[in-house]
Amino acid sequence: MDWMAWTWPTAIFFLVIASLLITFTVLAIKFPETPRKGVLQIETTRGDRLFITLLGSAFINLAWLGLTGIAQPWALVLCLIYAAAVFRWV
Image (cartoon, rainbow, N blue to C red; front, side, top):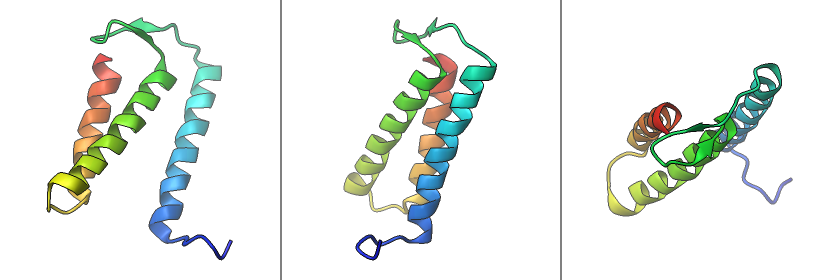
């Protein structure tokens, strides 16, 4: 694996994504959920909302990098607010 630049932030990123997927799988097995309709008027489950959150967070970070000169950790704060909104209202 010498070809890939594994740094601690990269490893933490992949560990967080893997732990989220494992946690949501366990939650889906232990506490089955019926889909619900939110502001988008589509039926979503926890997994759907997680996907929407991850996809939106990627776009937020890309826009942050391209449009602002502010430090990137502030984009994480914005992503956490976005995630809370998605899980609450979508």
